[in-house]
Length: 119
Image (tube, rainbow, N blue to C red):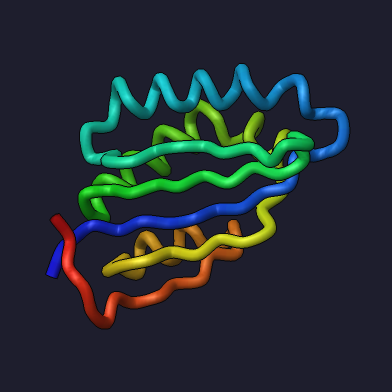
């Protein structure tokens, strides 16, 4: 089995924050790409009305997630939580208890892999 862990986070853009979203996302994507080699997939999608945002993230392993969460907390958490309200957060794969606990505040639910493969 693979150590890869991924998630889908759906969020609502908070009232009055629409103009702050794109600059924040651009900064977060650039920092994640530059500083986190264990981040394998990191993409944001916006609804046509710009009222909801979905992020798809995939990490090499639990350590890569904890690196990401440390960077997120230090650099972006305050602005991110001002801009977005999590609506749905589904975590896929072999996340350990440290990761599950770290993501619990976002309302993450975990689904374990039961079949399939990863290339």
